[in-house]
Image (cartoon, rainbow, N blue to C red; front, side):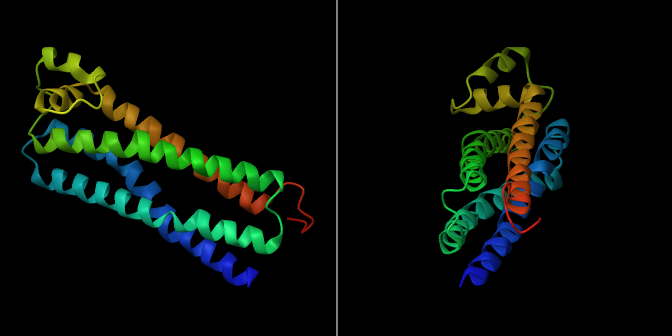
Length: 180
């Protein structure tokens, strides 16, 4: 049963987390292109697709820790330090995705759909610090500030780095007697 859970866990990680990391990484440069040319419908459609991929696969990604927990239980390694560290990093990665990446993608997507571009007024740029504020002025301000895509890229990079670290811990498993 352990091998079955392990296979499902690895497949879920590849199928669910892989697309999120790629789509989330592609979103900031796509947003910069879409904001630079507000009339480019293809760029806006690309952003919508990338955001949908991130949302859907983030939901499917819940299978990864669930199957990982089942695998760890069947292997009897729930108290191993490498696994506890992996679970903590997985939780942090999920929090970064849900609290920092997806909301900022939505804000940039709203700005693109509202037709806000790099030409937005300086006055609206001052509203970028009110992340979470709804309304056209706030989203236009976010779009007017080029740092919004840079911050999103940074949070996406942190998310990807966390997953890379979890993957390394899963492969190397410090203290493992398998010789890996």
